[in-house]
Length: 442
Image (cartoon, rainbow, N blue to C red):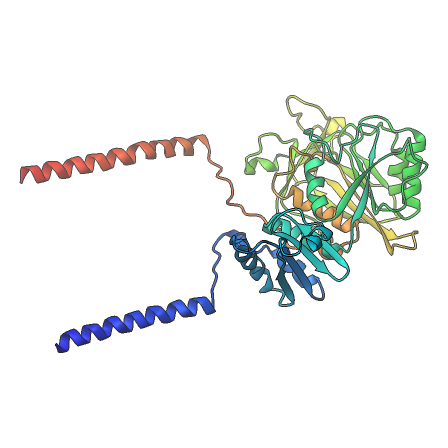
């Protein structure tokens, strides 16, 4: 009897301990994220944006009760409230007050409305990326209009062709940047409400009046992003290059440093290290530039900061396709390292801006639909736009990427993996057969 009572007491204590642990689990929690750069948790960009947004942030969810959606939304917002205690959440039943729901412009059950001060944003998708983009738009303070020059074969900000920038600008649109096409042949001047003008790799020669409008935009203190490519020196843009004090060097950059990363074509320039600049401070992601023209300074009216640079193994060679030409000093080839990206700044002539900013990059493909997903291309493009638009706090947001998203394996590794997949089951079968024979003999 004494032994039974002792066993019963042990069981009761175990049940009491399990109940206590269950109760404590409802009152407190702990989270561990062992993924690379903690990408399974809230992104560092989101944390930085939450800390930048000053004052209360209110989230209103128009979710019907009884479907489990409210619990999901509560858990989602609770993750962000850890980093911003004045982030509040309230629920509104769409069926209980349909008039207020229609007045708020609600179209989806569970739609979120974020309010910060006088600004409000709607979210119809419950995801970390959508919430982070909304935080970026709130932190930006308003929609920024970017004028994309069109009419001369430039890359389209909304196109889906391989060379267009539609995918990148869709990401920027989610963060409050609106692309506005501007044909210089059809307007008297570039709209003054544009925060930035983008000239993205024109193919045809620009008319002198169009080039003059670009030069006037610069002289009036406007910001500019100029993406150029090899073989584009005869497009009538000499006055623009002279105004910026930059020249394009002949040919294109050949850089064999990318071979260590598996790049077979040395015309693709891989950049892993960046000169010190406001745009690339703390930026550690590799970027890929297919077909690059080198740039050099020719003036002193600006403050010039090198932004992108090829390796010491690089050199210039005539642009083209086919076999890669070898270095030849006799034909005027230049040895690297070679600059192909510059950030320019000076005091602005526009009273609404303190500083005028320009970025010139000798490649437009790195932001195209084809190459946007390579390494940190999209992250670098976002930093360039944020800096040109004057959102310096967004430029300093930490980049997020994981090196373990893809498995790169050569033919030898693939053969070894295939052999292992065949040999391992065979060894297991052989071991099982040997064990069966041994037991049978007994």
